[in-house]
Length: 138
Image (cartoon, rainbow, N blue to C red; front, top):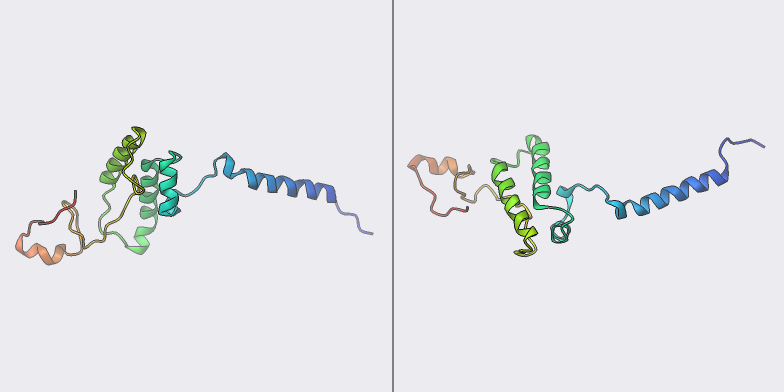
């Protein structure tokens, strides 16, 4: 009969500790990637104040910075405007003002939406006439 350095009892204790550790991890604040949450999950976290609009916005901006060079998904990233808007949403959140389920959730606009002061895909077509924006989003 071959002798093993580990006992069955030691294995069972280690396995039980691992299971308990995994079960308790969410209860003691699991770290999660805020940018990978669904809108519903993000909304629930924001509503319960377990996450802030600033944290969520920064996580999304970090994801854009990480992947945009390979994907080339964004023509313009308005980082400062996004953080400023998130701070405003966070201030409202602490004042118990709630605009609805999308309160504090960052969005990305398709590049064919005309926004004041931002580059977009149709800029090349419209630039020949010195065109001013007729419809602008703040």
